Length: 323
Ligand SMILES: Cc1ncc(COP(=O)(O)O)c(C=O)c1O
Image (cartoon, rainbow, N blue to C red; front, side, top):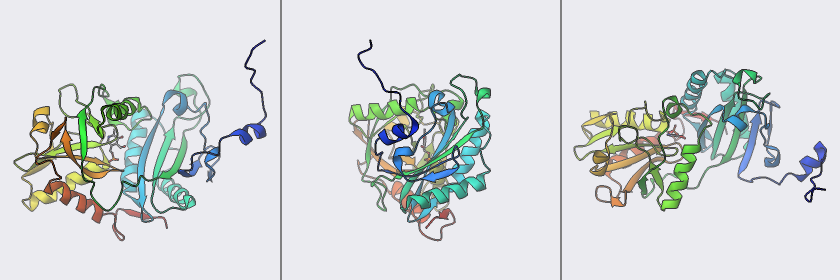
């Protein structure tokens, strides 16, 4: 007779035993039920969804600040591209998806949140064959925005080189639900006692962080970012490059372009920047244990940060109003 006998229970008893849930999750939409819930204990994805047991899905993360979603269109466009690359049909057209996002954020009742939107291959099989899945599913989770996201540019962060192998081919370019290398990069950053790590590509050029892009400003005032063929095309990095092009017109910068960045270029840079949805534009002040430039945020990162913040204030065309 087995020593640890597990009860077989019915649906009601199962639901009654679920933990109260994570209180930093505010609302969830699931196309499985085609409804929104605000009780975190029942925010769930079926176990036979291919996204759960095969990582077969794509996602986006974006934010709502002061009651409006920032750059939603760019995120939905990237999502569409990710679905196309993996041959996953869009569960609903993008405009309908945007409406469901707005409703779910509204249901969460908070004006400053993060949103994780996931599209999965679908339910129906524990096997590997994607063609055995039923229809694609859409999940939208509204959750806590870390307090670090403020009007103020962060003081500066530390970065070390990553030992996690860079993702190959389309796996680097598509925002898939296979984020194990990214998770391990965050783990190594925590283990090393730095804020972020950055991977090198096969040519030993700078690639990207766990969930963020990088760029440098040289002593000659050139701003370079790794071309988006070995890294994810970040929506924040793209905006930052557009701002940098304006700074070039103003002759504040001499260049603003995608260009491979060698380790040597990074080591001698005047500024190193991080770009990402939750971090906005953040200065790196320590790289591999050494100060970057003068060891304090430089003038370019400050300008780019201000230009980004201007897009997040009311009446900006990049905002989608929720509240
Ligand atoms: C691997 C990776 N690189 C870069 C980024 C930054 O992209 P974005 O600026 O669109 O948030 C992300 C975002 O999560 C990411 O996952």
